[in-house]
Image (cartoon, rainbow, N blue to C red; front, side, top):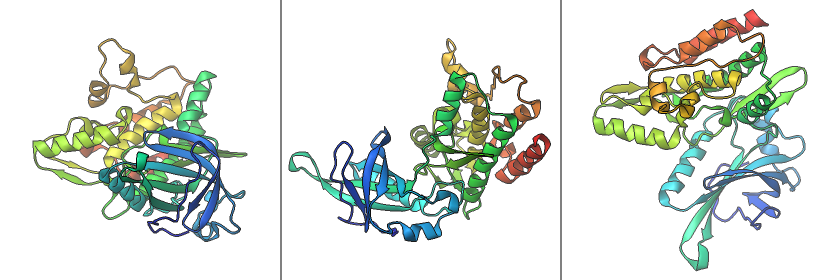
Length: 339
């Protein structure tokens, strides 16, 4: 499938489900809506053109190929030049990555659409991805918590190891890219019989080159404002809450989020969300001070080595926080220990 911005090659002839969508030369039927948020809607679609997607399948990792022709399609309503540039940047960055634990962008189109009552022209974007119908890690842990169930220690580590592999790919670019929004809601899970769940990191709308030199208070405030908009609060690194006027920011913002996510694979929430339920509690203060609380877990409980692993990643000072290669060495040792 092509990767060009197409003019009018994408046609959307349905308002609330049903109908067909053309993305460049490939035609898809909308089956149902899977979700929505902000200006974006996600649909389950099925290809209806013979051999549609054949070119993409050749370049895909086998775990991403659709056997039955179904895909996920993200539709984004674009109402400003700024939004248009953000979507184009998301497409550009998504197209950089090729890894089995990162969700690949298979095809895309941006089209012009007439505004209401014949007003000004706006845009719509259509992004095509493999579909994973077992939901996100957030969906799965919420369902498990409701039943007072927990992932076994080895499964926790196997899911986490896959996220590390995907992030290593991003951090290995020159210059490195940071995802900037690692969290359970951005991890797709596919259950596999006799194997650990497949974990795939998605949503590169916040991904950017990771390394920034902050030289002034105004630059620090701009970074904080950007982070408040693009990085989910319970998983946001301390330096993105309270950035010094002179600082070197790097990809270890993702390591903090990764530590929060490991905690969430175990316990279903971020390690700092308890602060939201406390009278006078402050999520920001809990994060900046790295005040982790350990809830009751499975019986027997998770080993102390997993707790220590989380704390190692949740170093408030980014300069002493480990890099992704350090994390991978350690998680591989833990997997060997608990296999």
